[in-house]
Image 1 (cartoon, helix red, strand yellow):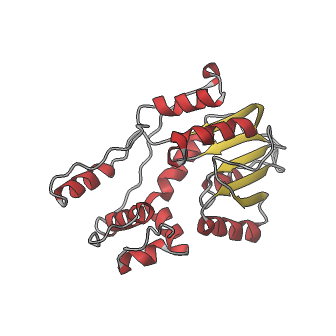
Image 2: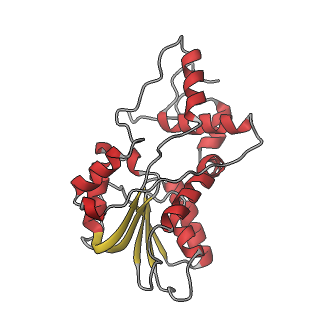
Image 3: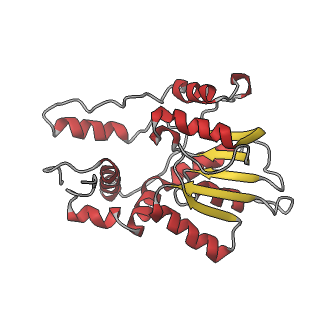
Length: 246
């Protein structure tokens, strides 16, 4: 039987985790910070020139694509963007906006670890807040980035160093489960070692890499609804165990 992460989800969470509600909750809980992070990363590279072929890898609802198109100048009108992800709901949201606005974006359902594009396709490959969620601790996706990037092309790959909301979640989890420690992730990404390691193993030369840090944050006055949305959204990804329906 196929695994269903929503099998034990409480009814109040289902509206946030199914269909377009999932996209709306993601944008409400993490959309601003992921967008701000991507926007900062785009300032670290030269302006994207005319004729560029860009991969918005693990695109979600198209955060990177939207940023690039919103900053396009008259000197670069003919960029082409390929936006890929494995979540049909997020892809559908992007496809709708692409059709509505006649954006130069081609949307397709593809795994970051097994892309269908030929070698040396892209001038730019951007993987925003996603590499750490891919298989093989990010290595397979990094290899695909290297394979599909043209020689001399630009790749942006990033991950979180720290998540301020994780600490209160950890405290609540431990206090409601008899003091049992919250499991640590199998791979630590917060010191930058893992992300540099997989990029080097994928074929990128260390002397051509640049490491940068940035701080992004979002402000909310909804101190009750915000944590509830975060908890239900992330539990929807990881799955609900029976009895954990608060």
